[in-house]
Length: 158
Ligand SMILES: [Zn+2]
Ligand SMILES: [Zn+2]
Image (spheres, rainbow, N blue to C red):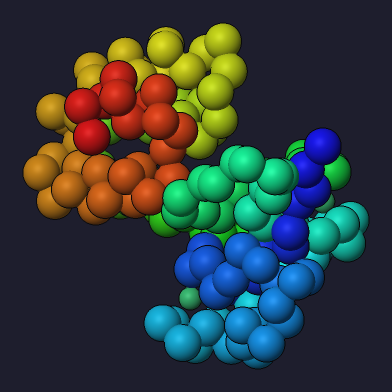
């Protein structure tokens, strides 16, 4: 049986360390990439943010910031910020009808987590992308590369 180390991550999602409990000296009060405060606990339920899974004989490479709290299911601040920016890009696009904008908003929700609706969300985005306009779509693409699930990215060709 392995255990999880604790991760320390900045509010914008930069991973400071995935080994915060075993090596707190790697921790930082503020992010050295963007200056945002860092956190190692869920702001909603105070559970530790899971870091690197450690078990004998298992050596993982790399560590991605989790999107949601394993204990209460809340989105972490960086997930919320990325979703907010996607939504504000969707708002900016005047080329979409109000109905299409709503469809886009709910599709975004299903691209950051794998749900039975993720495939439908991918299709919605593909249909709406040409209508969004090149500028807004370029912005959405770069946020989605950071935040969408692997299967959503694959489906969207990102
Ligand atoms: Zn940062
Ligand atoms: Zn939580």
